[in-house]
Length: 382
Image (cartoon, rainbow, N blue to C red; front, top):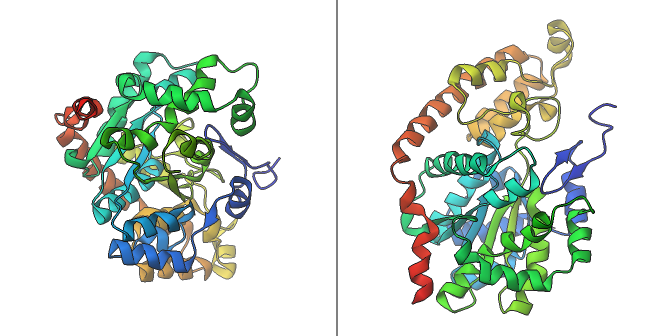
């Protein structure tokens, strides 16, 4: 079976097949971000953003409502996270960088959940020591992007369970197994910890409201595959006395192979933040492309950048100037730029990015404790 013929599967734990983003909007029930809504975001934020401009952040739930509340003077908080099942790859950084932009432009607090419990429960190959180490390593990648501790709280589910449990049991009581099975696809082989886990993922959307003693709007930036979690969270929110969290979804950064998203489970499909620059270059140079069978044919007929991960890396991360991106696109489709030449442009960009990011990781190693959500214990006692 070819990649194009493979059935699309998009869940919080698995993505395969050719992803149809229009179908996902219909399937999940989110709304497309229109040009009109973009302008409202830009008006509130005070500047534009490349991921919105290029429709790479493309759908939402209740974002229009959130912006109205913000205009009234009601501040919102941000919530996103990471399941630490492996090293961070370049794809994970896209929503984190967008989250940082939102935090800075809207001057708001971020609750970042490290779901080490989820990864331990859902992955039979991982031990607790594994997820603890990945939690630390992933935290370095987050902090290397420039977040500051004054408004950034990293929640480690296992270590900070005392902050989460009271809200989690209230959520769990509202969600039937029938609902969980329908939304998440649980069957009789699922361990009872996995069935419980979605209640934990709902908590940070409500945590700030508990801390301040007042309902506070929440915005969740995430990839589209995580949306099922927020549907259940939204279903129980009002019954528990909270606002329904709004969300804003991005498309996937593609893997280096033919189709599919970048995956931590396939080392050659992904460029990891811990890869040496030399290894990253090797992965780029071996990447799938939208090129023709021969150079002669490609010069005559052009290539297809729209299925090419190399071109998509330019679009997501490495070519913010629209004129530069358009030039690459025209040269590719016109046959003037061969795939090897195009990779030779991306490879040094990737290498430079990794060198800077890895240097930033080293600089934050002594600051991880500054971001710990343990600080919230004092706030919750007040």
